[in-house]
Amino acid sequence: MGLLKKLAGQSAIYGISSILGKSINFLLVPLYTGYLPKEDLGSFTMLYALIAFLNVVFTFGMETSYFRFATGKGLDPKIVFQNAQTLVTAVGLSLGIILFLFADKLSLLFEYEGKTHLFQWAAIILTIDALMALPFARLRLDGRSLTFALLKLFNILLNVGFNVLFIVVAYHIVAGDFLQVFYPYVADWYNPEWGVDYILLANLLANLIILPIIWKLAGKWKLQLKRSILLPMWKYALPLLFMGLAGVTNEVFSRGLFEYSLPENFYPGLNSREAGGVFGANFKLAILMSLIIQAFKYAAEPFFFQQSENKNNPLLFARVMHWFIIFCTFLMVVVSVNLKLIGALFFQAEGYATALPMVPILLMGYLFLGIYYNLSIWFKITDQTQYSFYITLIGAIVTIIIILTLVPVLGFIGGALSTFGSYLVMTLLCYFIGQKYYPIPYQTKKDVGYLLIAFFLSYGGFLIDTGSLAFNFILHSAIILLYAGLIFLMEKKELNSLLKSFSKK
Image 1: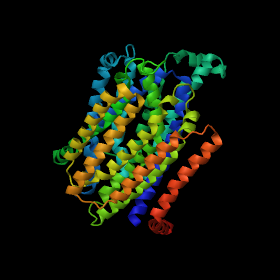
Image 2: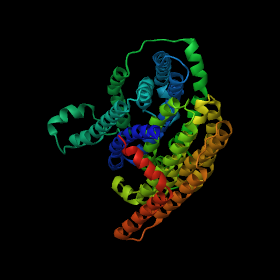
Image 3: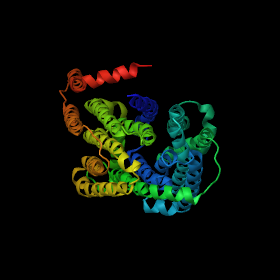
Image 4: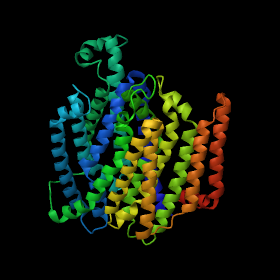
């Protein structure tokens, strides 16, 4: 129980910071939809999907490899960090330079003629992200969750601040709405034709400020490349690299390439890139589930490795999975039944609400991704990471098939189903293969029951619309209370045990 309490505590710190940070970042949705055309949001969706894909290449699975070799191999964690950080730095700088030099060709390839600087900035962002990856991982491994969380939050605040400065404040100054004393200075650099350009520039500047801070906090390191350490780490990380590439295909194909899969004029009044912007904006409404998954992953990955020698760890892993599913399904119900209200608050222009029906599907898809992260511990602590590649490759194939077959027919729903279908298949494969090599006594029947009931309540609650805000609120609240009551009845004994544990000092 103490170990579960420790994991919950660290997850809470990561979660609170993520919720605060993402909530602040979420405020960019009304800013983007209010100030930028849908075509710019389409460009934003595609470019950040590309960045997400290349991020995997730049770090090539070394974060997880670092956790494994710094905890369970009898090696000095400092030496492991120095070697891993040296290798990631060398690879990140090399790839960044190559990407920067080929930025012009990439801009033509992706139909962004005259926007070479976007791909140059993306190269710099990717390089800085790679340089920060291992230092952030070191904070997690050392249990410095508060430091990690505060620094991530500061990065988000900087990013949001620069976005507001470039997209809102500078726009109004040049338009003559306020602060005219600054007009001569702002007019020298402000470009009214820029939209997604300022989003990338804000990200770039925020990362540049954070880089020296995280290096300082993570501690000194020296350049070191020892074959005896790096070769086993590389062999362990290589399947994780391909796993990451296959996994992030979901992001690229369901978001970045959505506009290329959708037939022109599929949605009246929207070209394909504008429809991609609507799709990307609605994708952000699933952010609450994704940030919980991210917070859990931050805490759980080093935690699982540290507990890998504990003879009771299968029971611990099963218990973690059970409560993870309960918490996330409850969150899914709360968000889904209130989606129309959330959409009305954050979409500041017409045409975005048409994609809302896809969001409950995305929430469920992200939940399966979180379950997959839980399940994947078996191949990480048994050093059988090759299975990660096979599983995620199949998931990527499922994504591609669904995108090519369903997006031209179902549009937004088809894009959401690609995420849902891929993560569902990956979860099933990881579960059945994992139970063969590393049996864990999951509460499978009960957990599946929670998933089915929660999805039914989520989509049913979303579709309910009496035409009255008051009646809608009452019915939606009743659905949430119904699910909460079900959890209480099913888990009464366990809840009492957990509450007693967490109340102990």
